[in-house]
Amino acid sequence: MRYAELQCASHFSFLRGASSCEELFTQQRPAGLDALAITDRNSLAGIVRAHEAAKVTGVRLIVGCRLDLAEGPSLLVYPIDRSGYGHLCRLLSRGKKRGGKGKCIIGWDDVAEFVDGLLAILLPGEVEEAQDVIGRFAGIFAGRGYLAPTLRRRPGDQLRLHNLSNLAARHAVPTVITGDVLYHHPHRRALQEVMTCTRHRCTIDELGARREPYADRYLMPAAEMHRLYGRYPQALARTREIAERCRFSLDELKYQYPQEVSISSQTPQAALEQLSWEAAEARYPEGVPDKVVRLLRHELGLIGGVT
Image (cartoon, rainbow, N blue to C red; front, side, top):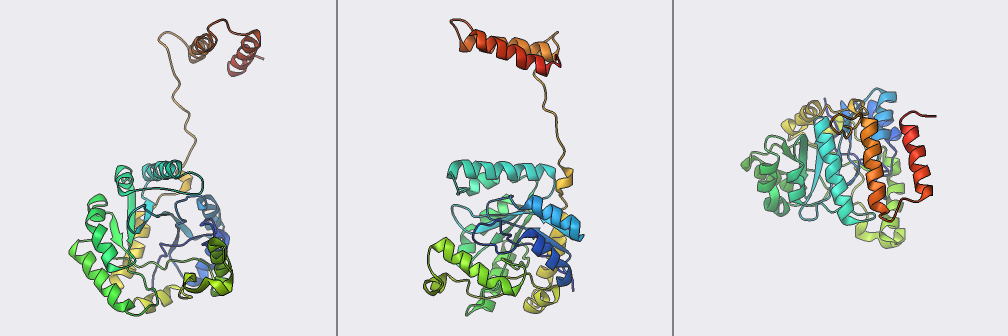
């Protein structure tokens, strides 16, 4: 029974994920998973730690991120290549700049602008929520969009999954299974509840319905995922299909020397000195102060290799 987990939050999902990347990747091997995606909320902060943990354990990392959109359900997005990773970084930068400290505001138009090189999974809560956006989602991620029908351990769960699968089929959007993991082992649930209390600023006794309604948010073995979602063998198989499509690795990121500004017939150093002195004169129209002159000469000398 083969399975790759495509939705997993680390403790870089602040006050939500209750396990470190090291714990998650250590747990992955006994779980028998083919690969593990780290998809923290509106952040790639945990990806470097996940990359290091994957190398230590020999388990493949799928780079990803969960986007909580300003309108509609959330998305899981994965860069297919280096270009896609760049687009995802730019998308997150825009959302965080717009939202300010601790927030990230991203809309569908933003996603559509940076869609190149990204594969996505739609995470609808209810069928009605999916109906409102699935057409737009399918148009943006043509050939690279999936829908995740996920158990929530609530009455009518199987009917909800059936209806979501039918809706996806009508829009030619393939379904794929995800575990929506918040911690690596069942015993970590208690810590996750404490983190939820901290997020809502309440005690355990006051948590009530804000508590995660079921205890299946740990990194389950492949066999258990096949037991839970046995009615959807194709959706289970697509987890490995997506893992194969999303082969981007942080190892592909190398330092790129920026293109130097050049002026015809001048060396880069001469061009830099000319532009620097012109800028200094524009900054100090009444004359460049001696202190600034000495500083500029010192800095330009360092850059030019003059001791």
